[in-house]
Amino acid sequence: MNRKHSIFANAAKTMAMIWRVGILGIAMCAVPLVGCSELETLLNGEEDEEEEVIENPFKEYDDSPEAMILKWKTQPAEGLYGSGEMDDPYLIRNASEFRYFINAVSDGSLETTNKNFRLMNDITVDDQYQWYPIGGPQTFKVSVHPNDCHTFYGRFDGNGYSIKGELNLQPLWVEGDRLTGHFGLFYHIGGANSDYIIKDLTIDADVNIVGGSVSNSETLSRASTKAMIGVLASRTSGYPIFRNCHIFSKVKMKFDWRVNAMMLGGFFSVTGWSEFHDCSFNGRLGLDGRVAASGIKIGGIVAEVYERIVFENCVNNADINANDATCESIWIGGICGDYGGQRFGGENLTFLNCKNTGNISSNKLTMQLPGVGYHVGGIVGHMNSSFSYTEGGRIFSDCENTGDITFGEILRGDDTPDEESNPYFCMGGIVGQNLNGVALERCVNTGNITAGSTDFGPYVVSCTGGIGGYMNTEGLTQCSSTGDIKGMQFDESVMYDDYYYDEGTANGTASYVGGLVGSYGSSLICSCYTSGNIQSSMYADKQYLGALLGYGGIYAPFIGSCCSSDASIDGKPLSYIESATGSAISSYIGNSKFFSEEDYYFQCNKH
Image (tube, rainbow, N blue to C red; front, side, top):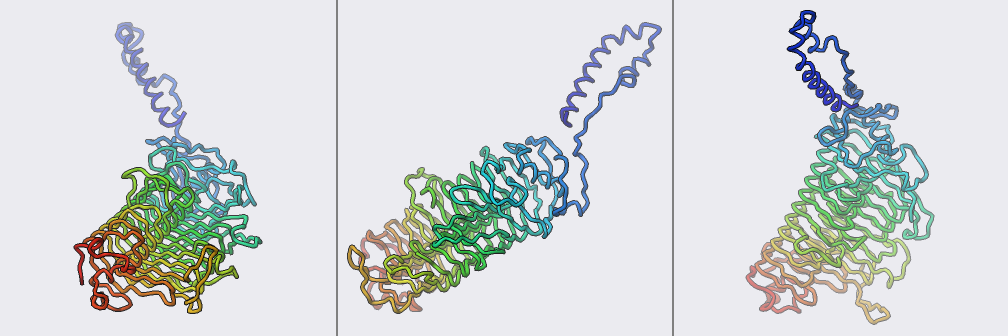
């Protein structure tokens, strides 16, 4: 009988005794052989046998500072105090109880569905401790079946406390189509209902990714393994909600990787149908020159979202770098690397009041068979197109990027023929590439955007902008960019030649650079502002530059109440360009020859 059940049993017995003895009290007092004092003794229970009160055996615990340190030799407690109910959660009060929690969830002996857990003290992880994800075997195994792993379906209240120290994250290798290495405090976190899953938790620990995997496959796309890395967990399922969770960590690789896919997220590698409210990642996410993968996805909060997501009041303060990495394609975002990539998910998304302050960079990125290239944004790297969406269910507003986004040298990694090497490079202060159609409102970029240099060519397309690189949206409203924008620099050797596809002639490299967007669709742009210098690409066969748009699309967008009077193009003020062309729109839109001022340009500052 647990603590609460004992209390209720004692109360019931006391009431029964009072009722039984009270009825007889008057008669007993009237009998000379039985005095009232004896009756009082009986009522007080001194002559009745007391029922044993069963206390929760885990009520007492060691609260010494040493007991708060999780070491390799820490022995698990015998259990947790509490019943796991909402008003009586399981308590984790020291490292021994934390060790019990880890073991019991991992071997499946502790049911977590709809159970409640609460952290009661800071727990420090010793720097020698080898961390295997909670939910998987707590020892190294070459591989395990998914049925041998356990998703955490409970609610975890950090209670304002922290997991501190240093985390040496070991892989949990799970069998599947490809052998997958899962990294994180947890293996998987699942949502059993729409209530919170994790709240008020801080992780203040540097992270070492201890695992590594080198494939002998001829190409990266044929590699047999992949890595899914998140500090909180590898991935989520169901509909989990995270509130007021903060991670302070420098994440670094300890060994080399050559895999099919590398997904690295500050919180999770992959998620969907999830909500993040008032969460932040702080520190650093780095590949450290140790990663070669067919696809690389990195996000300050999540590397990949497959569909349906809420990011509200979320911040990435971490620098992200992919220096010396090798890949076929790469997606990087301060909040999310890739949205909707797996399932063309476009339904019910929210990016509201999110911010990136970290610098995003890569130098000496080696690309093999680059059929995609890179997509990099201060908030989202890439947003995939969607088949359908709920009216009014998509919000992208009040987001801000203050970090610099800088790519250096991009190298050709193999001898793929030119006609097969046709990468698409997209970089923007808010979104790298938006194929999703969602409109952006009140988004601001103050960071400098530098697209890098490459010897790839021809058939290369580069789109660079202060808000977005390539955008097919329902509109831009009250958005602004004040940073300098620099287009991609190409090798002089790829210019001036005609290259032939089977269908006909292609004219080499193309570059689109705009103060707001490099290449834009046809929707309204309203009340937007740009300043800073928009710098052209070097040695591009086709080049479009504009203070608002590099390229306005076949069907021209309507532009209203916009201003770029403080901007310059290649160091020249817009008033100079206007006087040379005789048209104000020429300074706004790079392909302005396709536009009519009367039809597409109204109530804008004419410099």
